[in-house]
Length: 384
Image: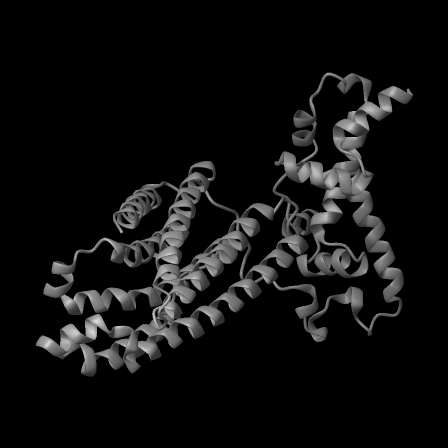
């Protein structure tokens, strides 16, 4: 038991250091950092139950019960954190107060039966709380809440990722992987904790102790992982505008003239626009801007961004991300086989053509040529 207390104490200490880091870090993602700090705070409060001494619990039983219920803030805060990272214009609004409804419900349920009891009855309820109908309802509420939020979070991530691909030219894997990994990780930890709670109703105490130990070790590993991520990516991340829509969500009656039935030659008009777009990409090379978006490109070409988005994503059947990267890769192929650029490293070339990440450049290059940039360059000079 001392081992568990030590692990839990270290985890909570690291969590509070990370919370301090997030709240004091100068960043354009201040709200995201505050929401994640809130999530970590309630996680730390929940984890602190391992080392809170029995005399403190006996002296302040209602405070201990209240601490249990604070776990209902965790997954809503994580959901809001996901929204704040995915969408750059996300702001907290009054409607977000609805996320505290589960906490309010369980507090009202616990008031009459548990909070207002005294003496021996209160002591008995603390010792056998997992057997009371109120706490069983509490457990069900946690599971329903967690399942619903997890599904919604995964839907938000999928939609945001598709919007990124349709509207932006820079890599989105960083934020998506970070949030997706955390979601899966939290799911695994949560359901291990649920399994542990189920074991309380059995006589398998050895397995319960093992699961407890396992969860505390995992919590320490996850906490350390948070710290490493925060140190590596202190500025966390680009977002997209919440006003952006996926192409298939556009209403037919709002489609631009490229798809209008009232036009005499819609196919001919689309062909002309595609030729103009390709000519502009080849001659003006807007793809050299690593932060190029469909809105930027539309402004440069003096056309509505929605029309350009449909032109690329629907008529060319390509994501904007892949469309722009095609031109970057073709430019990179020229530079890699250019004798005057022979002394340039692959890293220098990827920045020259508009990429800002070596991993995204390598992935895109191999997708386009079936070779890595280095393999492509070596193959060329061997045969020439």
